[in-house]
Amino acid sequence: MSEMVETRLKKVIKENYKASDIADNIRVDETLATFGLNSVEFVKLVVMLENEFGFEFDNEHLDFAKFSTIRDIVDYVESKI
Image 1 (tube, one colour):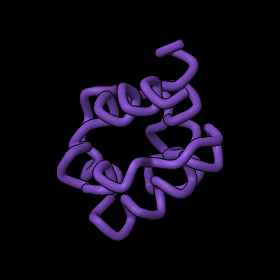
Image 2: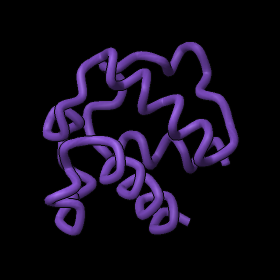
Image 3: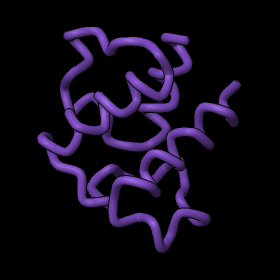
Image 4: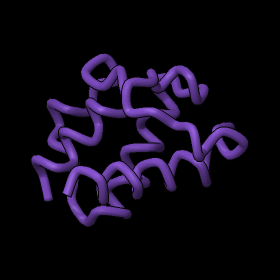
């Protein structure tokens, strides 16, 4: 399932952030800051992921500091679906 989550997450990033020109090279160890995400953009990403995967982030996980890399988000999404 990890690969499916990773692929869908990369698609969301590619379609919504400045990563569209490097989408094929997005690595799970890259930081979210690589794509221009700050705490406000993180909240927008959370909403997009909730819609994409059909679940809601727990309130205690709405903290940008808890998700420094794409892998962190992939792992969390996998735990919720």
